Image (cartoon, rainbow, N blue to C red; front, side, top):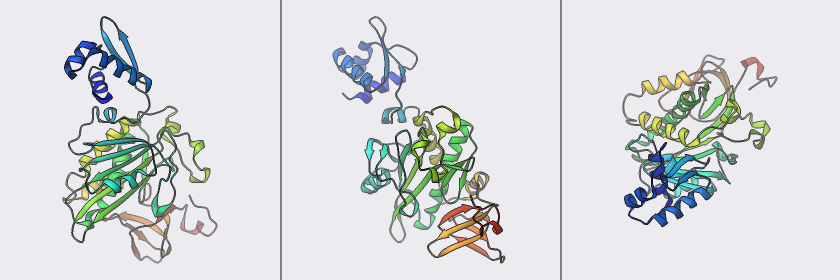
Length: 330
């Protein structure tokens, strides 16, 4: 018998005692085994009251990422069918790539820390304790050309979850950053494996500064955390469940009419209507961000009036086109 069985029972009996005999009968083990497993949970930080007459009562859970806790109350059919949690990995996206071909659709990889986290363009990503470093493996039956829609859904899912759970005005900075008060709270990295006409898998990686001490982050990153914005820590498992539930809804049919999803993205955008500088491999592009299309491309109006479709790049919000020359950008 493993801890998840005991923990699941205690979670299900939330708010009431459950006797050792009741648990032993339900799991087909001895009461001594129950006692040992309860003590094991306590050693991991779970607060469990014990009464010789009433049994056991779970009154508190530690701030750890545990598959049983994340799955408890998760209202999905696909997302989170398998949840893998680690104390430390090089990168959750890298680990997800290793197992993507054989993993089931909706598999989640979580880690308390990453030692080699990555952002866009292979930049390093700081992943200290307290954050949510998560990758989701998806296997939709779509053409690879529709894969960018998954990234659009990922930004909406996180921004919506932050708004609904914590009341914070989370906005999406193109292509895949989440901002609060113009400070970065999360980055998203989507990678795919595809044949010419078939998407084999997509991996969505979220790096979320949840209960991260912002002093541990580089000062030049203009970063924040949910904990810093709220003044208290957040329930990371609750946020993970919300993201997975939102993702299931938005990605239910990626081949269907995508306009409602794009409209939702537009309503959450921190970029549209602003003057921007986009850093691309071909050089910098300066203009006004006008719209985003269903491929995730940013439609940008240049000072000449030409409309440019930009598929990828680093976006910098400017205070005005004329201020680019003196460096006043944000």
